[in-house]
Image (cartoon, rainbow, N blue to C red; front, top):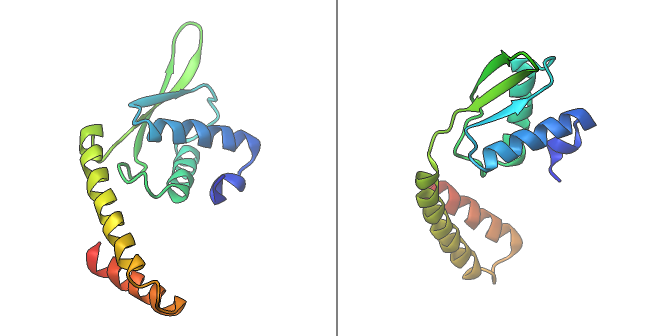
Length: 130
């Protein structure tokens, strides 16, 4: 598992997993039944998810929080705000994959260099191409 996840209590790990799964699957919303959760607490957990998974570039972690109740149950509805829809993400993922492949080719050509030089070359390539 990831660094920030391991730092959380068991209760917060469950919330983390729920939010991670929602972001990962591009879910429009998720529902929580713990009415003690605050917007700040949920925001902190989403931030930790995004720190552990920086490849979830399609959201900044913004969301709307609705407190709702019907005659049987109270719940929180979280609507996550996405920067890109799923179709846009597929196109971006293709572009990213091509860039990664190009970066790997670049590194493969320089494997004969010493480790410090390889790291310097990779950092320079990332700086110039991203």
